[in-house]
Length: 611
Image 1 (cartoon, rainbow, N blue to C red):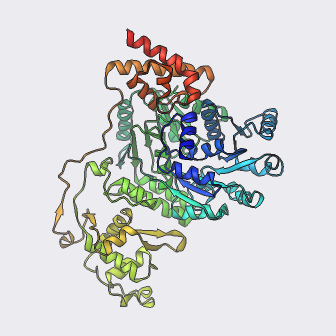
Image 2 (cartoon, rainbow, N blue to C red):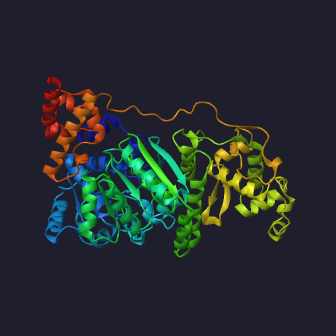
Image 3 (spheres, rainbow, N blue to C red):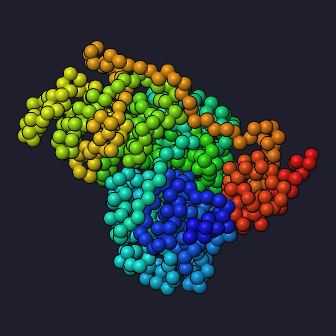
């Protein structure tokens, strides 16, 4: 079986090996098991259902939320010689009628469709064709706890009822534990196989800049973009007006930029997106309406002009940088004015309590003095016990101290309440408060009652924030914000691991500064990446190959990265293959692309190397 999977992978996608968990997910699907796969943006989720679709009899039905996302996936598959189509409102009825007929004849292996269109087609098309599997892309949209909840997704539970024997595969890049469970419940998945890949994207650097004045902010952005000359990126803005104003400023400074937001006419939005995808513009200044449908692998950087509303949104948006595995840089600006506006929006939402808590977590991330990547990983339930050395906090570490005893006191109190307490009550227990809630629940009888009375409330809040960001406990939002210990927390509680905390910046009393502090004086080894272009000759060849790729893309009216990715071009530049067969050995070049593009690329390489 493994050899057969690798043959299909190489034949159609040009890869010699699978990424982490891909093979396990594919095997589960081929065994017709319901499957939930969580993988980071750029982690290779699509291949997990595309390979089974190619190997199984019938048509795979892929539920996707956006027409642009369907279009991108379909073009990429067709570029690999795979029979894929999208059935949606952007087609005329003649086209859709033709697609239905091709499906009935078994000529289409992957059919992309929106949830609304899927529901309307169930009594008709879907009853007349042989379906191999259902794949629900962006599955977090189905959950009320997800960051991009879409009511139409909740009706997908009808799939289990109408097609009981067809496996359902749910895929997403951003779902915490609560959202994961809700996805399984909403889709009525039976004995599902759950695969959670590492959410870590070590190729992305993480930087936060707080409280900059407008002029300084703009100057920082201009310097940032000039440092990324010829490299494209996205600037996410809170509002339409900000995206428009920022676009004008960048254009006035000679930067090829465009705006994208819901207030533009459809044709304007489509043109802006197409220009960005096809490398005609360098910078997209956009609201969150932009991005989900973008599979562009060579986005090199992401800037958040304003604070995002949640960590899920933030992580999904920065995940659009460096999808090809090459370095990506992210920069987040944060100001108090952002908090004021976002708090107002959250308080007016249908899920006020949940959205306020998510905003609070995002604010804590921006204000944190510990490794930012650890905060992100722990938020999604992935224990990360070492600093990343590729974020601004790691590169400029604050003073730290051995906080094991402080952490043990807090975790012990959580355990002794049978994990029934919230943050505020926990602090009252540790401080020895005689409040009504404490007495009524008998918390004043606990061994840890008053165990931290020498630490001010403000410092406890800071320490508990650090503990949560470090993943020592988590908050069950769906259970009245109860605190629950994690495996990492239990290790510290039972003396199996040390807990290092950051010294509070504004301690109330001098004695509250732990006497033994230290700064990390060892050299910080930042994640360094070797540039793929090490010589001027390589740069020249790379640009020639990129020009050829652009010409081929324009000829076929598809984005350049669908022809070959930047990563592919870097490998070709380094290896300089002289034959079609050698060209086909480059990672990411399958049989179809080898035969279709090999000669033109080889001709340029031969001319270059003989000059």
